[in-house]
Length: 284
Image (tube, rainbow, N blue to C red; front, side):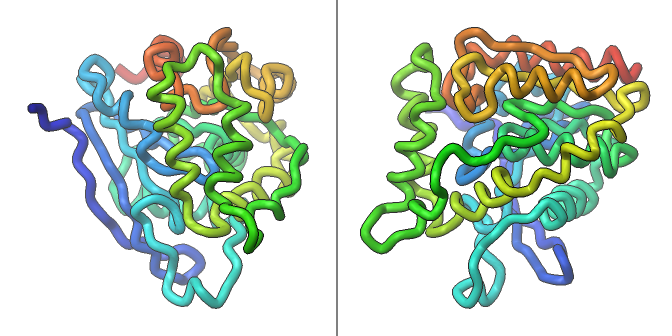
């Protein structure tokens, strides 16, 4: 029997004047790294890295469930509204959580929609962070699927979401972790994945903001999996090339959810990314 070092708690923050009770987990000590999950999922995607003693010996990893996700309940009166994530709400939520936890210029590491918002924050609020690790991230991709299928009375939205994302998991992913990853989408709340994807596939505001990112002050490292059909290596390369000074790594045997689908394969890329943040910003 073993007890994991991950500790989970709740905090309450205000986003657009509305109270949000947010669940977060943390492990380790040292330089803070705020970790963002993908669309339709939750903090469990980061559990392998948070259990990695080598990483947490020098880094305090903090991951939180966005409102409506995982253990973070929707706001009061959620049953009277449709959930649709926006860039403004997303940025405000990340900044509010970081401030509430008293994080001093953390590294921001986000995957998929979390990688997209990491780049938005690099453009709009770089002074609040010391570096950005944008995983499976690009400036914009229009949907190649109909998101309305995730909100039908004759279909299970969670299973529909899992079926969609299964194509973005690498064939090299261990079977157990493939299904652990898919389970998070199966368990997603009604309409949540659809609401996340509306942000991911409809808001193209980052395209006009990439030139605002100053990697001379705050480093940006983009990581993409070769088996990602949603944010392809070409998409990631196009985005990194548009950011002066950004660096890029392509993971030959990984897909769209590297930290959960194949944690051992992702581990060296994440350690390298953390090292790049330290070397570039001069933090010990």
